[in-house]
Length: 79
Image 1 (cartoon, rainbow, N blue to C red):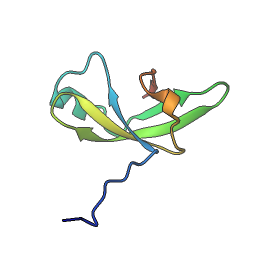
Image 2 (spheres, rainbow, N blue to C red; image 1 turned 90 degrees about the horizontal axis):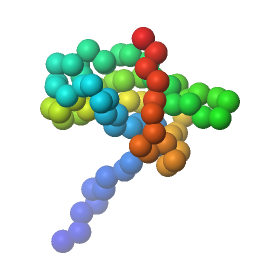
Image 3 (cartoon, rainbow, N blue to C red; image 1 turned 90 degrees about the vertical axis):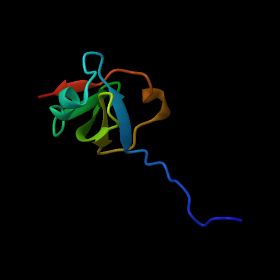
Protein backbone atom coordinates (compact mmCIF):
# COMPACT_ATOMS: atom_id res chain seq x y z
CA UNK A 1 0.00 0.00 0.00
CA UNK A 2 1.44 3.37 -0.98
CA UNK A 3 0.92 6.56 0.93
CA UNK A 4 0.72 10.08 -0.46
CA UNK A 5 2.17 11.43 2.78
CA UNK A 6 5.85 12.32 2.72
CA UNK A 7 8.25 14.15 5.00
CA UNK A 8 9.90 17.28 3.69
CA UNK A 9 13.09 18.74 5.05
CA UNK A 10 13.21 22.49 5.56
CA UNK A 11 16.70 23.92 4.91
CA UNK A 12 15.86 26.98 7.01
CA UNK A 13 15.45 24.99 10.25
CA UNK A 14 18.16 23.31 12.30
CA UNK A 15 18.31 21.42 15.57
CA UNK A 16 20.92 22.88 17.91
CA UNK A 17 22.67 21.28 20.87
CA UNK A 18 24.45 23.46 23.42
CA UNK A 19 27.16 21.79 25.56
CA UNK A 20 25.99 23.22 28.91
CA UNK A 21 22.26 22.63 28.35
CA UNK A 22 21.11 19.15 29.35
CA UNK A 23 17.55 19.63 30.62
CA UNK A 24 14.20 20.75 29.31
CA UNK A 25 14.01 23.73 31.68
CA UNK A 26 17.44 25.06 30.72
CA UNK A 27 16.61 24.76 27.02
CA UNK A 28 13.28 26.55 27.52
CA UNK A 29 15.18 29.65 28.64
CA UNK A 30 16.86 29.85 25.22
CA UNK A 31 13.61 30.24 23.26
CA UNK A 32 13.33 33.60 21.42
CA UNK A 33 17.08 34.21 21.55
CA UNK A 34 18.79 35.16 18.32
CA UNK A 35 21.60 33.10 16.82
CA UNK A 36 23.97 33.58 13.91
CA UNK A 37 25.97 31.13 11.87
CA UNK A 38 29.16 32.81 10.70
CA UNK A 39 29.95 32.47 7.01
CA UNK A 40 33.13 34.00 5.53
CA UNK A 41 32.27 37.70 5.84
CA UNK A 42 28.49 37.40 6.22
CA UNK A 43 26.39 35.96 9.00
CA UNK A 44 23.17 34.03 8.56
CA UNK A 45 20.77 35.22 11.27
CA UNK A 46 18.16 33.10 12.95
CA UNK A 47 16.04 32.65 16.05
CA UNK A 48 15.44 29.78 18.47
CA UNK A 49 11.76 28.95 18.06
CA UNK A 50 10.97 25.74 19.95
CA UNK A 51 12.18 22.82 22.02
CA UNK A 52 13.05 19.51 20.42
CA UNK A 53 12.62 16.56 22.73
CA UNK A 54 13.37 16.48 26.45
CA UNK A 55 17.17 16.38 26.48
CA UNK A 56 17.97 20.06 25.94
CA UNK A 57 17.84 20.32 22.15
CA UNK A 58 16.25 23.36 20.51
CA UNK A 59 14.95 24.11 17.03
CA UNK A 60 16.07 27.27 15.28
CA UNK A 61 14.78 28.95 12.15
CA UNK A 62 17.18 30.93 9.97
CA UNK A 63 16.35 33.65 7.44
CA UNK A 64 18.20 31.94 4.62
CA UNK A 65 18.79 28.26 4.00
CA UNK A 66 21.69 26.73 5.91
CA UNK A 67 24.23 24.88 3.74
CA UNK A 68 25.27 21.32 4.45
CA UNK A 69 28.71 22.37 5.62
CA UNK A 70 27.04 24.00 8.64
CA UNK A 71 26.48 20.61 10.27
CA UNK A 72 28.51 20.13 13.46
CA UNK A 73 29.81 23.71 13.44
CA UNK A 74 29.36 26.40 16.08
CA UNK A 75 26.73 29.13 16.15
CA UNK A 76 26.81 32.36 18.11
CA UNK A 77 24.03 33.27 20.55
CA UNK A 78 23.20 36.98 20.48
CA UNK A 79 21.34 37.74 23.68
